[in-house]
Length: 234
Image 1: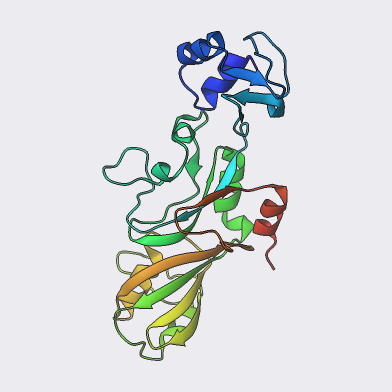
Image 2: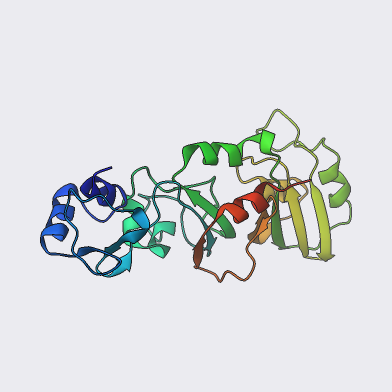
């Protein structure tokens, strides 16, 4: 791929803007030698204003999404892209969230520009469960664990019962909920169906991958070992 197209696809600017960067000598190799648009050089050797070039297509990252951020490129208010380098929002193919967390939910959000990987993650065939830490407005009654595990719970407006889900009670108003499917606002609707209200919701795990020590609002690029851990499920 030509260098101008490569940098434009990575969000460094329009092709015209990127051409200007070459003219201004802002694109160099690892030794500081100025590169020209027709040079052939390894991706990892390219520098923009002295900084290594962003990863090529195939970028996958984990974001610790705070509350009050929206998984969108266009909605008003604070967006998940505000937490990333601005050029990540301009990458082509688009760096998309893998599924969504609603505005009031925090926790692990995966993002990728690899369409095949995105579809593999969300596919039911991959059997990637998701764990949520739940804070409730009212005390648990005691029958929720059995009802969620029954495979018979029917949510309002749905015509198909939910798959069995695991509820691990930690205190009268704290629990971990493990889901094996991803219906719209599922966790919140499940507790509403048993007469309770979710006060706070946090996703802590997808498949075999956890947030670890990644701080709120922080992100990190996932490598091959991370993806192997993600899909390493029983």
